[in-house]
Image 1 (cartoon, helix red, strand yellow):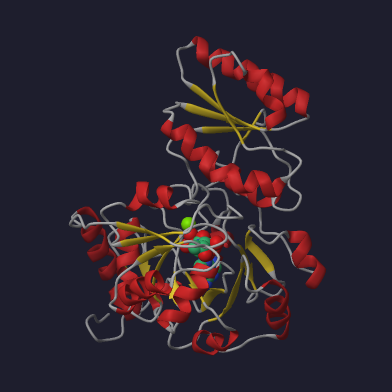
Image 2: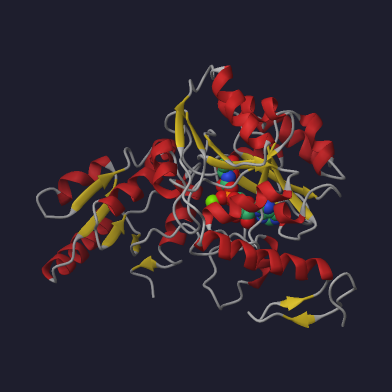
Length: 398
Ligand code: TXA
Ligand code: MG
């Protein structure tokens, strides 16, 4: 076994990870460096600039693009959630993303493009069905997993041989990528393990003092992240349900399949973990426990109310995450009520979901009781995020 410039065939790192190559080793070294930087990151001034979400002001966009060119990171709105962007081909800039978020290196980033010509920079093959999907859903909330091109830094892909690519449809995001003149790698602009930000204020709450600039384009329209679709597996597979529904995808590719759903850590999660290292079950965990309820409206309300009263009696401060129609059930019970709108309209619920979770956090509740919103359309993405926040458990099931 050789190190430093020589081939390292196989070894073991102190945290138990197995090393297969020299690249993996330098990857681990960089990870340690980033973890240190996260801890001791000097406080920087965070500026917020309001931008018109439909016709972004060129001066604001140019400011942000210059920062990206200079190797800095910038928070910008997309139609799904706010992103924390860096120039995709600048390794030092990419490191700053991980430092600012406290994100582990084994969680790959999505590369954002503004035109299909940029695909050639990023991937070696654009299969026919990728082109069809791009034609229908781009620009929009669909991320395609394609074979990684040789120029894509391993920090972007977490060492995988695939790369995640999406063309956002938010005018501010598109203007920024165009002004930079090359692709922008961006995860959601939240601290690692926190819910994604759907307003500039959410991003500020998580990243103040850690990023130089936030472009404030108002609340995000969709409110859940993009759908991540793996086109490198035998059957196109959804790795993360999101802003483009399963139904919509199947109207173009009828054989799209769902992921192996919501496995409990330690019980055979390996298949999913290898394919999508970032899809940790607790990825969207709010800082407080969340209990997800299921059943008919009546049954769900009754068991939520009973659980709420039981916990209140023990002196717990309970938050309930519900739909408009549930509100009367909880009014006057002493619970903190957060409604996500009309349960029959998943798009409305999705747009309100992350802000609702954050509002309950801010209200300092000790537990969140949450109703089920179904799984049709964007409901699948909502359910995925809620299940993750609930640690994969549904209340009432074992
Ligand atoms: O809507 C969105 O997708 C937002 C906005 C900013 O575009 N971005 C976002 O990024 O949600 P992030 O980093 O929070 O989530 C990206 C997800 C991660 O769960 C990651 O594991 C997965 O995409 N991913 C990235 N590259 C991948 C790859 N090569 N193979 C499998 N999964 C990948
Ligand atoms: Mg994220």
